[in-house]
Length: 195
Image (cartoon, rainbow, N blue to C red; front, top):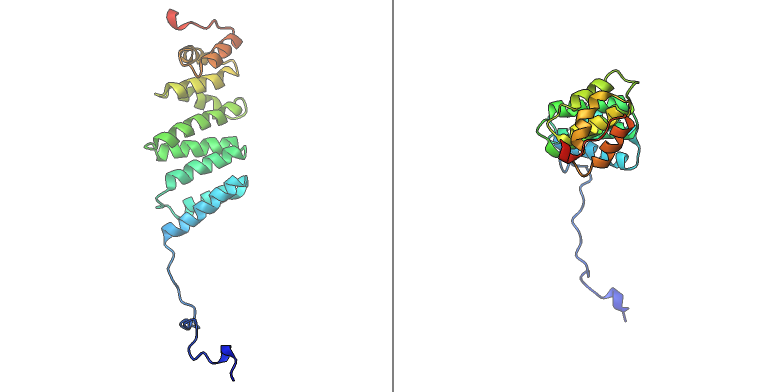
């Protein structure tokens, strides 16, 4: 008598087709796909706070993939990464480049303007570009950008900030900061009713 497992004539699981012995390319990576991979790697490095390495990858994308569809984001995140790494002058320059090359980016553009003001504010008195940059930002069409620049200028007592600070008193999110900045400069804040 044969044991039970030996008399089954057909296999219980069908055999799989043989795998080829020579490697074959399943797909050819596209330039867009290569840039996407680098972009994801840079984002992961940024999330890991490995700023220097992330900035290097963003620069590599700009250099090697000049037609990449996500270049505005690459430029913005390069600038943001430099800012996180406390390379204030480089970050301000990168934000300026982003704003000049991608003026159509409204949401990222707003953030870039405010972040650039932050970088310039930290470098007042140390960088030749900081104070002129802040003064030019006070001419921006956005009240928010004007007031943010004026608040940074007020830290060094620059009287050119007074008009924008007075304007900022009317904006709920900035009114107290503007009031304190004006008082710190020895200027009486004008109430909204007196303007």
